[in-house]
Length: 113
Length: 113
Image (cartoon, rainbow over all chains, first blue to last red; front, side):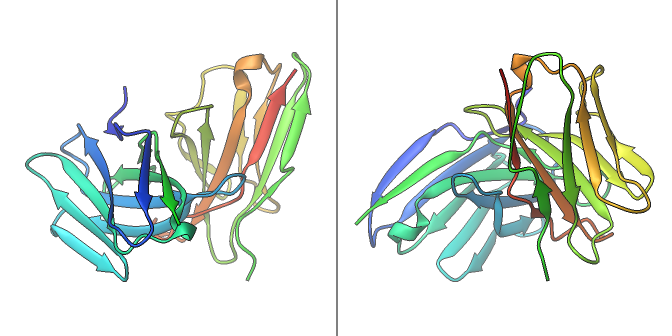
């Protein structure tokens, strides 16, 4: 039962352009969402998060948008850089209660120089 | 300030042997989480522990898998009588009591031959 879904397994973007990674969830109880970046042979690294009381959170080149009615979030990277090439995981949890994260299956981003 | 330390990085076991995976949390973190990533899948929550206490083991397989986080020493994920399907990357994360600030280790890649 995949409660967090990333339907695009891969994405290629030219350097300098915008990368948009999408994520959908099915559980309306989720109220805190995170994006992680993962390089091969390393653990996931936290990128950015958003609480359900917000619809946007920005940190430098990274912006996460949340559409609660559609149960959809997206990560925008502008401008994309070759070093951004990695697998990006979306995760969701309950802000109060259990601390385990529910992960999507990941999107492999390739930024072409 | 060392991050989350997992060892070994790679572990090869024959079918039927036991696998022990270790995780030392970040300094100041009292909560440990174990996740498993099967090939081409996202990370799946297994178990959440505090010192000497299992808080949530809803993601643990019912048989052969166990986890502990003793008062002294690292957290241990133990898999008895390993089978080929146990081959995966096992990630440990730790957090302070708030649950926020998840930090992942680099993982242990288990291969069952």
